[in-house]
Amino acid sequence: MTKKAKPTKRAKLAKATQPLIVTLTGDRPIAEVTGDLKAAGLTVDQVLTSTGIVTGSAHPEAASRLRKVRGVADVSPDHPVDIGPPGSSVS
Image 1: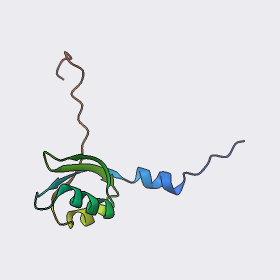
Image 2: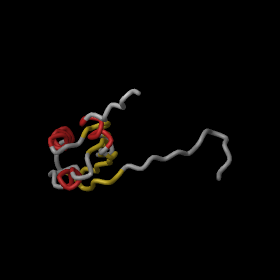
Image 3: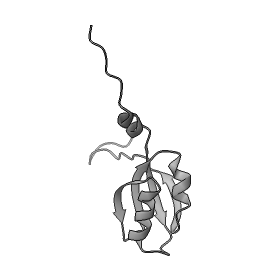
Image 4: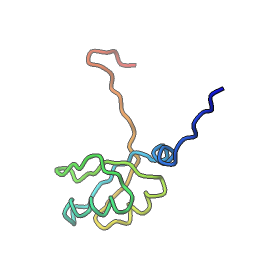
């Protein structure tokens, strides 16, 4: 009988993250705020400079630290949206 491997600590940590959307105030350069967000625990996916939004993921406990970063207006969970293929019926 083969023994199942236990998930590694890294795998457990990866599963414990949640996708987030961080809205910035515009008071500071976006590159500086992004650096501070990374230091506070955000793994950055995209920096949307024209809209002042940074997307990424972090552990749920990190959200309170992210909200305290100077230049952050809001930290919200990102929710997947699926509009279906073109031409599909509305359900």
